[in-house]
Amino acid sequence: MLLQTRTCRSGFLAVRVHYSVDPQTWTPDRIEAIRAALPGWRWRKEYEIDFTARGGQKVFDHFDPAVHVRLCPFDLESGHRYRVIDHGRRNPAVCLWWAEDRRTNTVYFYREYYQADATIADHCRAIRRLQHPAETRMTLIDPSTHRRTDAGLSTVADQYAAYGVRTIPADNNLAAGIEAVTVALTASLARWSLEHNRPHRWFADRLTNASRIETLADDRAVYFHPSMTNTIRELQQLSWDQDADHDDGRALCERIRGDDHCPDCVRYALLKNRAVRRGVIGRSLKRI
Image (cartoon, rainbow, N blue to C red):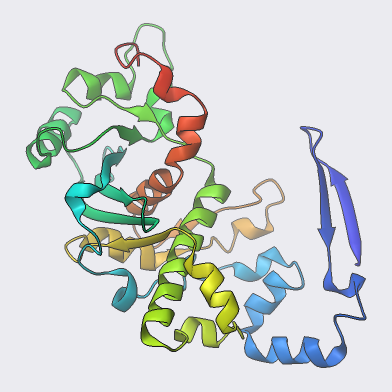
């Protein structure tokens, strides 16, 4: 396989390029050197375009509590603050609070609500108790809560609004969300590497040079308050679904040993700007 093209149902032309298309750059010595520095499954996934190789592996294998869990690296009061909710019924309902410091291009998650087996009224009362006056600019929520399945029934989002928690639908693009979280976690590792004058061990396994680390450090970074134990645990446990990798109808899937509502919230938060660009902010919140 050198180069493959296919047209998606939307008409978009997708091109898959294998490294073997350029044998002058990808000499046998270079290929062997890179392969020796990577875990076998990662080599197959990233260089041989074998997406089934990820099965059973951690989605965020570069999450390092020693780096990503810390007290706020900027003045929290000066940042723009938001909430994000992933509703659950028997599974936990989650609400995360996060702040954005645009000067340093940093996102900081600083508070979590995590509760199973409770009513929407109970969730809203608890969230409002944790909320400070005029603390957040808006609240994102799993977009499925805004879908009306019966003309005579209110949506889950309507019920949240009735109890004082107005929301707008988040962007639930799984591939884009996982990529956004991956990039932000990598940026945090890159900044740690520059602060300590040595590559983080995650970079050392990938032959990442100093120039590349400096470039990665310019991306948006993400950190979590130590009190967010459920979020930290679920981010570390989230794994690729090994069985779904063999299903041609599901190009990107996930499975976690336990619950995954916290990682979903992190994804929604880091895709906030996509929701804004869709124009949902322009709607009347009274109608949502």
